[in-house]
Length: 381
Ligand SMILES: *Cc1c(COP(=O)(O)O)cnc(C)c1O
Image 1 (tube, rainbow, N blue to C red):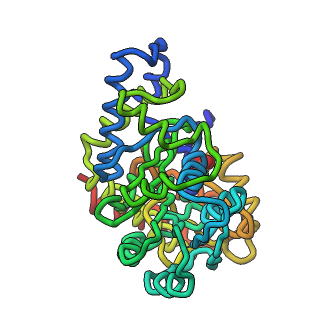
Image 2: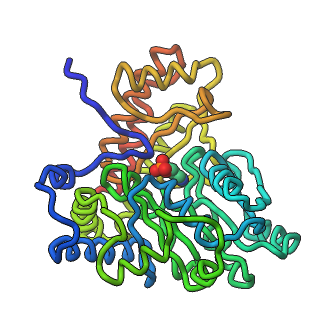
């Protein structure tokens, strides 16, 4: 049999054909009106997805580069911050801050557990010198969505700013930056933005720019002021990833044509279909506040979780993701993110059923497909 490759991971995600082929076009020079025209269209499109009036800067790095940019541009050595750490990516905010000599009050949550705005308000009361709160919109290691809107409400009453890792969530689940009082939002190209890995995006509120003016942490390549100065001239400070930016223009056209609301609804339908599918097999979700980006599923008792992922990927070439760190072998993650369609969920569930039956798990064959199909059929338009 021809073994087709199915990318079903929460980053990188599949890329539409006309976006892929744009990378094969001859390279144009970046200090030209032709490039600036494309670049400014991308800049406008990013503002649409971020739902902000502020500039959105394009960095040539993976998402973590934008996280580092946030930290290095707003803080000074010894500054106090709060980090809401709900998993692998929340943990990363703390690691970056500590690498820069920032004093981190780390709130370590059980993976999949929520953190309320009331809890944040208490933390701030106990730590009045806090300069910034770091949070994650969609914690990709556990499939959990956090209450960014609530955190934004709490922080409007405070001098501290709200810094959000929207790398997997932005563009797939609602998080309007300006309306929800997010001060720094970061995103990455290979998640919901429908292009390959290699670009990261970041935007600062006026409240955040005030901190940028006072920040003394070292920075050079990721100095936000350089990006701001050059964006005024419709360009980037250093050589941009020209082909990726052209790809992003095409992908943003797809996103804008569909519209954000429909895009969120699309992810909601795929999320519902996946959740209903795995529940029909008698499986349980890891998250108590699951999002529509990906579904993290607990490996059932008696089943070897590492073998499950290995079989899905190696034998069926269905590239779901395994668990990370403490959840390695204990969960698996099916993404419904970016350029995926309804039938991608059916593929994931079919490969899952074939794998589970091979590993000796007892369930009703076809039940997950039936459940997912019901959701897809009800919502198809
Ligand atoms: C993927 C991801 C990152 C890391 O991004 P890289 O592009 O691998 O640097 C950070 N945070 C979240 C929530 C992610 O999903």
